[in-house]
Image (cartoon, rainbow, N blue to C red):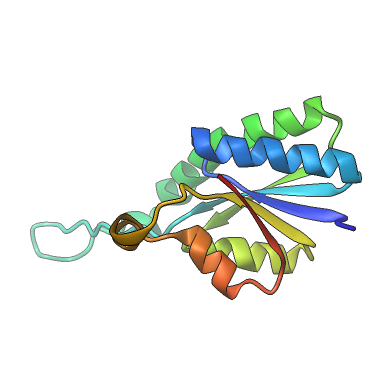
Length: 148
């Protein structure tokens, strides 16, 4: 059925529920797993006294900081997979919006299924907060399993 499963995580407690369910499914199906975390584009501009952008995102520290934070999410997730005997790869997508990074990674890795979580918000709170899960559901050509 599913031979390669992409599990999206941001390291939150809610995302951990999706990770565990995704790993459980992968184990049952003997599927390979890609655990993906996405670092969204740097949104805050920094300016010096002349009004020029300091360009943190162009500095050597930028990528190193983003990679370090991604590893804080990926390493515990990969350890959980390894503890269950599941083949898993960690993937850090830099400077993409979450839905874009998840969909592109799933296509690139030829995933059969995307597993991710949702808060299950409706109405105004969903509109105000946005929903990367909703966007993945609307745009992905790959089946999506949503854990709540």
